[in-house]
Image 1: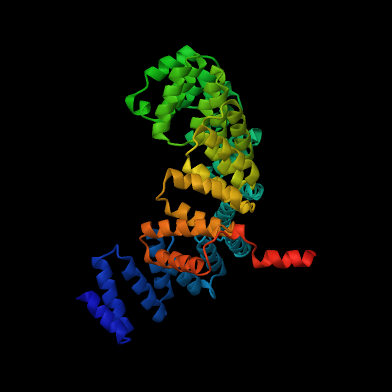
Image 2 (image 1 turned 60 degrees about the horizontal axis):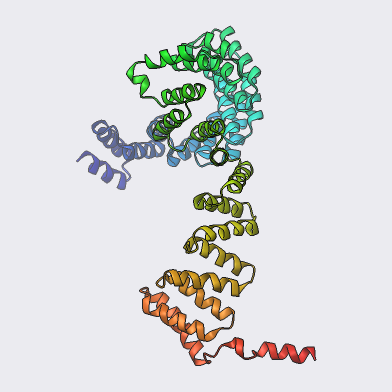
Length: 468
C-alpha cells in the first residue's frame, strides 16, 4: 500500500507526502533501483539536492552503467561543483565508449581539482582512459606525474610497470617497481611484479629471488636449466595448484625441455581445454612443432598465434608458408583466403578457392566464392560455370538457382534463365520471393525465351550502325 500511496501523492503533486511514502517503501525493499530513481526525482523537485545526489550515487554503486544517474548528477553539480560535474560527465562518456570526450572531461576536472586526493584520482582515471584509447605514451606520462605526488598507491606503480612491459621496456618497468619499494610499498604484489618482469626480460635467476609463487619458481628453474629439480617440485604441488592452467603450461615446458614433444603437446591440449583459443596455446604448439621438425604445423600455429595477436600480415605470411608445404588442408586454405579477402587481395584469395576445388571439387562454399569473384570482375560465363556445378551438386540450393538465373540473364541466355526460374518456383516457400521470380519469369516469357545470345540485341545493332 505504501508504494501505491506514494504514486498517488506524486500524481497529485503532493511531493512531501510522496517522498515520505517512497522512503518507507525503500526501507522495505532496499534493492529496488526503481525506488531509488523515484526518490532521487522527488528530492530534486523538493530542492533536496544532497539527498538526490546520495540516491543517484547509490544507483551507480549498484549499476555503474546507469545513464539516468549520471545525467541527474551532472544536473545537480553543473552550477555548484565543476569538478564533480566534469567527473560524472566523463564517466558517462566513458561507459558509452566516447573515450575522446571522456578524456577531455577529465582534463577539465583536473584543471579545477583542489584536493590532493581528487588530483590523484583524476590523473589515474585519465591515464587509464589514455591506455584504453591506445595512447600508451600519454598514459605513461600521467602515471609518472602521479608518482611525483604524495597521494600514492601500489596500484599506480603496478599499472605503470605493466605499460612498460607492453612496450618491452623492461628496465623501466623494474625501475618503477623498485621505486614502489623505496616509497614504502614493499609488498608481495610488488615483489611478484619484479619477478615477472625479470622473467620476461630473460633474467630468470634474479626473478627467482623475488617470487614466493611456487609456479613462478618452477618456471624460473626450468628457464635456468634446473629441469629435474623443477619437475620434482611440480609433482609435489598440492592438488589445487595442479588444477590450474599454469600447471599444464609448466608440464608442457618441462616435457619440451626434456625433448618429450608428444607429452608436451598433450599438456598443451589440457591447457587449451581450460583456456580455449589462447595465443599461448598456439605459441607453445609452434615451438614444439619447430623442435619436432614439423614445419607445416609450426607455420600454421604461428599463423593462428598472430591472428589472435592482430598481427594479420604476419599471420598471412605464416599461412602462405604452410600452404606451400601442404596445399591439401582445406580449412587452412579457407582461413587464408578469408584473410586475403579482408586484406583487399581478392585476386590472390581466389587462387586458394581454386586450390580447394582441386582437393574437393564439390566444395559448395568454394564454388560460391569463385562464382562471386567471377561476377565481381564481370566474367558472367565463369560465374555460370561455378553456379552450374553448385546446382549439379545440390539441385535444391535456392540461392544458387536464383543466382544462376540472374547470371543467365546477364549472359543473355534467356531460355536457360526461364528453365532455372521454373525450377526455383517449384521449390521456393517464401511468398515474397515466389512473386518476385514469378514476375521476372512472366516478363521473360512475354518477350520471348529464345537465347538473346543467338540474336542481336537492339544495342548491338545500334553500335554496328554507329561503327559503320
